[in-house]
Image (cartoon, rainbow, N blue to C red; front, side, top):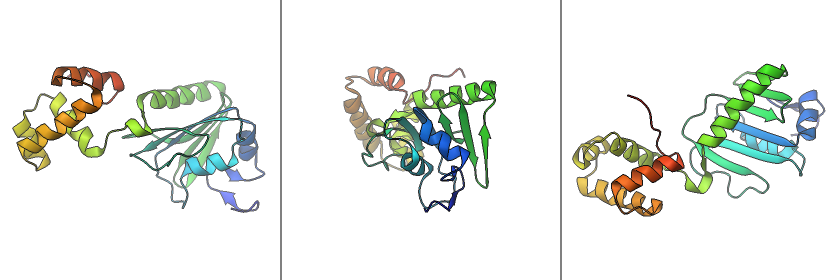
Length: 194
């Protein structure tokens, strides 16, 4: 992108948004992938952020950052919105076709708290569950039997037991109960009231 081209979220390279990004010390990006751009939002942010800045990124799905330098990356199964939080001063809220720069102190604090909450909930890139593992763990946490899980996933009960044993090994657990506790501690499953 040349200096005269305008990024749909970050603006032109010499815009107020780009200047705020270059001055930021702490940048937190939630990238839900909803944009229609060839490069993900977090990659474009990384290109415009100063080298000394702390850059944290939450994206959807597993993999994709490929060990990008100077980026702390986590993955989530869902994100409520794409945004770029610059220190505690500006939040760029990105929706397809429109972006809003939020500067109101209270609104920035609320959006920053949302972004920090999503960061805390997301998993480190190498520790994230594949979608099939997430479904398996969720069904087992709901108390479904191996047979019921197998029917739901379209596999045999033996395959369910094998995958459950693999998850137990990843968690360092010797029982399914212990695996459930450790999965909850890692944030792989959420404890909710029914």
